[in-house]
Image (cartoon, rainbow, N blue to C red; front, top):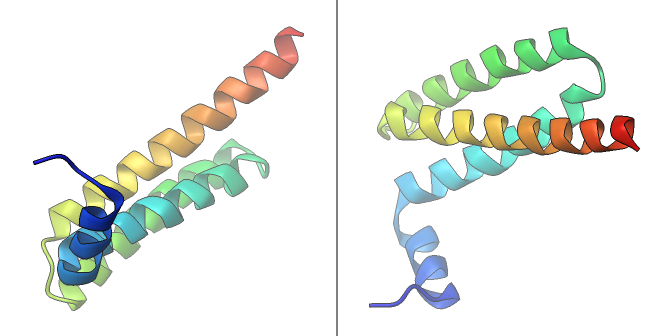
Length: 93
């Protein structure tokens, strides 16, 4: 069965673990992008704080913590890699 926007919306609405993981991914992606501009120390602090927050929130809301932590880590990693790639391109030109 092909994945459509409607099936993703239905999944988001009905599955709390999917919704939580997607929310953690998007928020950690934004945190990684914003904290990069304040320096590498802030970026590492954001990694620790976001992952601990994801773990705590998942446990509190009765979800599987590993899903939340994985989604948060991927969001932080993707946000950091995109910003780092853009920064290196700006330095190279």
